[in-house]
Length: 312
Length: 274
Image (cartoon, rainbow over all chains, first blue to last red; front, side):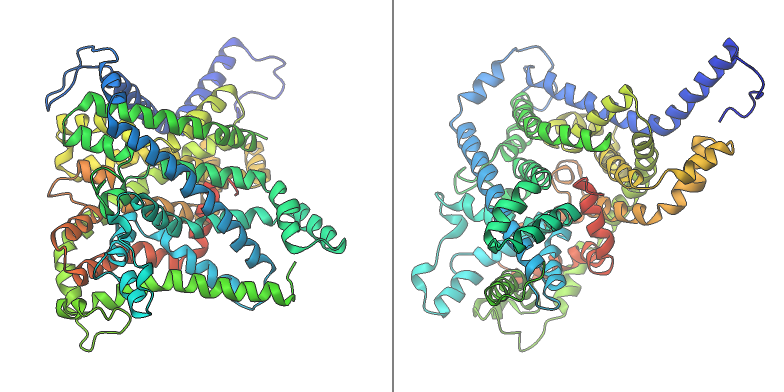
């Protein structure tokens, strides 16, 4: 890189060393400067939110007077907050576990099935929702779920299964579950292709061959050979799904708007309502901080894995 | 490991049927509903096409959402182009340099990648309101840029990691600087990677709702905000809702159907699978 340094110079002079350092620095600045600029803004806003959560700000005008943990106390005392936490936990468990299990079976079937064309057909079929927004998906599913004229109930009545008709998202005790179904529908294809790509290492294929020769059943191969060997693929998928369920806002907004009552409310939705409708900005910030902390915990194992993989 | 086993293939057929119903029914019903009259919708014949296809529904819906389509197109394109440029530069350095500083930066980028938008929403609204950027498209463009640059960096970096270094080493011996190597050698052979990342970022920005909802003004309303508005104000007009939603997914869905290979590569890069 330092073409101007003569080949026969035994040692760099201080000046040359300084200029080399200078050009390195300049190089780093060109490549990383813009990225760092945006990172500084991003983390600056994160700190700003944390600070706001300890302020006295309620109302439309900013008020950064220090109020300690006043709004945290208030938040933890709200019934709605705990309903949200429970709903968020439901999302975390029921949005992730079934998705991963179903995706695992679908991905495996795609690998071992021998019907021509079935693989590319199913991949396209279940993957198209990744191109759609939750707003669009939510609009369609609201229509499917609509209790008296909606598609599901009409079809069920049409084939004589009246007993299976349901209020879907209008029934407070099961509404969140029906919202989660939409999420699973949307993320299944995404999960399948991530798992499928982790099946396709030569090592794993050889192990499967060996197990097949030994006469192991298909299901045993899946559970005892494949699953333990795609742990990193599963880690990545589970982390991505956990984060997505934690941030869930759009589905709730468009399908139920948190209702009936606040039975389908989640932290992300409450944050929005508290901040922009009730103007309890400090508490909105506190809710944001809670969401961030949960996301942070979820992301740690993934970040460690990514760091190792990146710098290996 | 293909199997000729009968049970396996019966299971495949069952999966094929189940998934076909689960994934074709919603889109089929959507399409059928979008072509009906309001009167026909109340007749509850969802699976039967309309006797008199109402293509005007699409003209009406299009007229309704056209300004927001234009806004979203402008915003998504601008964010995609700029975050590709910044992300390409940053990702390349992250992929090619091994130092403590770069490691720390990588962790910061990694966390930023999955930062819930809620945690920066309040400051963002403050900045946008105070600088009056919220009144123009720049407000949303700048906001999305801040959030998508880390993603673009990691995605591009994943692709750069998979490029063999020989070419770059040879150029370095010939006295090319890192900047020259990046623009003259790495960028031209990475165009497919740029395409993949472009599709992912574009789709993400196009589909984003929370920020758009809080930051967009009547002049900058994005397509998702408009679709939510249509759903809210034409409650019983499912035909119009469906027509609008279908127009709204046309661009990302077109990317997926026509450039599916790039789309999938982008998703896998996001899962750090190269």
